[in-house]
Image 1: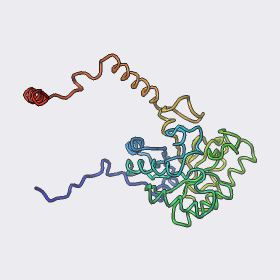
Image 2: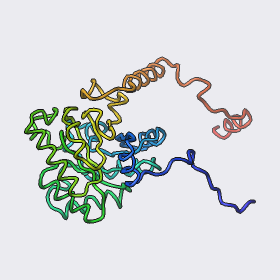
Image 3: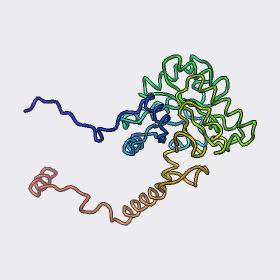
Image 4: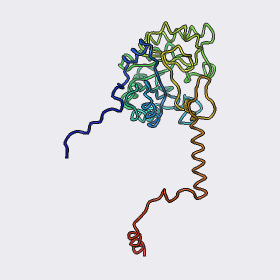
Length: 295
């Protein structure tokens, strides 16, 4: 028996794990950055296979996989479970853990503790928090000061959508757009390594991009950003309805799942499943011995 260790080469030796310096270099070179959400091991494997750069375990899990009507009910413990599953499915993308509503707003200490749990318990590389107001900027700065990189998020921030007037585009007036610019610059000054722009008019994004030195990931913010992110269930159609205006659907898996389960149910009810090809066999002599034992 050979004593040599079983060493397996990576499927794509040219792919290196994404790091913050590589991310910054992609912005400098103008290379588009691909980001997607994931909430479990299978979705993480799909992201890994596709070679995406960034994977966000988003609090959108509340609506996509946990059945809530908003993102605010999701708990930190929920996010930790989901992030651990995603971590097990990833090798190369940078893993970002979303800090859920109520887990960082109270104090710098609470924010740091929550961020540390995402790193230590779930294996996230970095964290993300919403908002560019004074409190969010202060929390971001505190977390970064504790040694954990932070991604910011401006524009439509779902955790505070009620205060924003609902799930709708932001920055559609000069004053509102100027506020988004102020918040983005404040997050950048606090040390955020990247910022998400969500549901912002494309023309506003174009105005702001020359002022932002860190990578900007857009979702409904036009093509001028350094990269794009979509929710896994939106882009694959694992949901009812069409979703937000900015979503491009690349598959319709919800319909396929519905049809698949319906076909299975029909086969069971009509006796078509299981068939002979789905069953296991036993040697006739063993079956005869079983008959004798049962008697």
